[in-house]
Length: 160
Image (tube, helix red, strand yellow):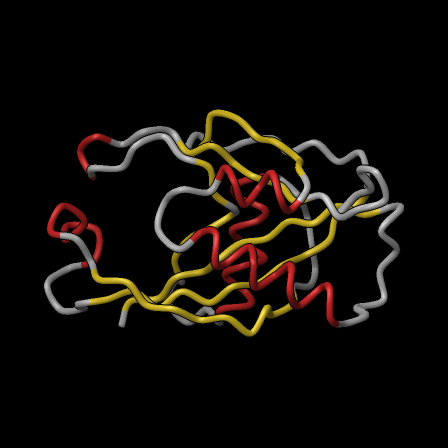
């Protein structure tokens, strides 16, 4: 997180459109799937590195999990068995002034306040995911200084 008028800033990434998967270009946090033998937390740390080049050591759970069905056009990515995806939401902190180096999955980034971020999140349950992080941070002290850090939030997925 970083200060923008003394408030938390969140990193949004604009996904590259993938018409073959019926996915438009849209704003989201860092997201991704578990690799074999990986915990949700390990996946979150890895995905932040892969999608932004930020090297973080720890993520924090927002205590929010939801499920969504696997669309027919996504079937090749998930195989024949799972019928839904479990998504758990985590957040992490990076130093103020940090600029991500985007992976090929994303075409733009933006640091913004919660209100603006929520207004840009139109796909899936991305609004609910960021709202869960905002609620967690607003109701708890996590021991970080908002004057020197920026907030990276994301959701990690697992086949279910």
